[in-house]
Amino acid sequence: MRKWKPVMITGSVIFILGIIFHFQGKSVIGPESSFMYSNPEWVSYGIQIAVVGIIISGIGITLKFIRKI
Image (cartoon, rainbow, N blue to C red; front, side, top):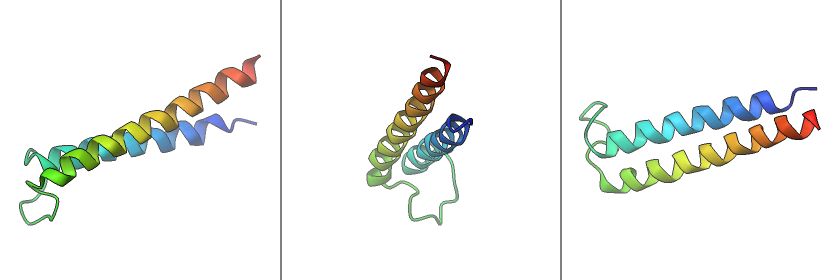
C-alpha cells in the first residue's frame, strides 16, 4: 500500500502555505485587509510552518524508501 503519497502531498501543501504566510507577513502578497499582512509575527510563523512541511515531506520520502527495501 502506498502510504507515502498522502504524507508527501500533505507536507507539500503545508510547505506552500508556510511560504504564503511568510510573504503575507512581509507585505509581498495578499490583501492589505488581512490580519497577516505586514505582521512580523507571521513572517516567523510562516517559516516555522514551512519547516514543518519539509519535515513531513521528509517522512514521506523515508516511508517511500523503507518500502523499497
